[in-house]
Amino acid sequence: MRSFAPSELAPRELHRILLSCVAPRPIALVGTVDRNGNANLSPYSFFNAFSSNPPVVAFGPARRAKDGMLKDTYNNLMATQECTISVVTYSMVEQSNLSSCIYPPDIDEFDKAGFTKRLSVDVAPPSVAESPCSMECRLVQMIHLAPEAKVSGNLAICRVVRFHISDAIFSGTVIDPNKIDLVGRMGLSWYVRASGSALFEVPQPEVNGIGIDALPEHIRKSQILTGNDLAKLASVEKKPARNPDFVKFDSTMQAEDFMLELKSGNPYKALYALLSGAPPPPEKLQEKLHKIAQSFLAQGKIEEAWQTLLLPL
Image (cartoon, rainbow, N blue to C red):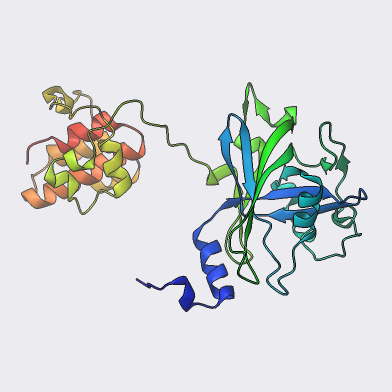
């Protein structure tokens, strides 16, 4: 385990470590205009939402690492107090990346990146028409995070005053993550596509779970069950009682070898194969029961996992 204070690293190395550890980060494609109406567009991955009532988002228009200069986004936002934020999808990530080039203030990054301007309703800056979700925002507060430093971060806290959301990304009344197909920023030059096989659901607890500390010791200290497995078991409102009917197998039950059934994703048949054969030593039996429980948990069958773990050795 490496341990160090930020002051022990060069700013560039610290930047790389922080952005690699705090990831993936959503990307805000921020549109602004200067006092003369010249448009600017730039992506920021120091970005997130912090309130829904009222809707408040924030992003970090830091000084340039190369020369310590303030970016056009910062200058325009301070001058007009307005911006737009468009989310970045997989189909527009390369264009978004191109808009990060350092062009002079009078150069329009919308044109350079090949994006279409969507006229705003309540603010002056346009948003990106290719984005399926854009927000018109007004600046609430700009926080200078380290005014004494030449190269420092700023935090722009903005209130959303209008949303523009494409009908195409909805499934019924909710936004479908596969349809919006967002990308997130990782460390260095890495991105992540937040759709397809990268997605998984973790339902929020419906009850106050008993907690991992309340699990029986042989479960809590299992060499097989992971922290995620233990958390699923600990999500129940109370520890289940053993159900003797759980191992009353149907007379037609047939199973192959224990490991074959387990690898095939058939934990109940694996349990039958285990219990119908010659019993292994207690420590081996416990290990195999934990593997069966883990297979049940992978299928979302928490009750079956508990009943497996409650079997006597």
